[in-house]
Image 1 (spheres, rainbow, N blue to C red):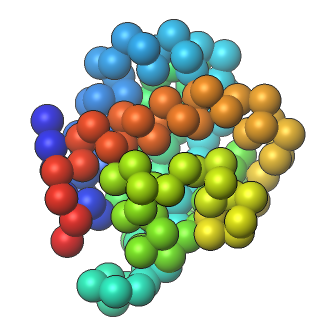
Image 2 (cartoon, rainbow, N blue to C red):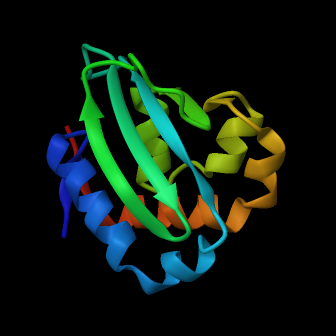
Length: 135
């Protein structure tokens, strides 16, 4: 299971990984909340991308590429440039460090995010394990 980031195949692969990874299921067993990841264009990316993940008790109930955020009210919105997200999904940049240094902007309850650092890190581990290369 490997896919190019940020392709639609990458989103499907990540959904499959989250739903088949026993470590993630245990680590995220108390997580309740959906999120929208907004990828701002930089480098090779010329348009804004929107990825939606409905995460619930260690499973991913839905993962999708969306044309925009219309009609969504996710618990968390994470926004970063393409270049910074590449660093996160390839393991070069810790997501918590990225949040604290504003390379990854969070809209949502930061306290919930900070109480769930292992879940956040394991979500990113799943990302790095399925990311073969970048576009």
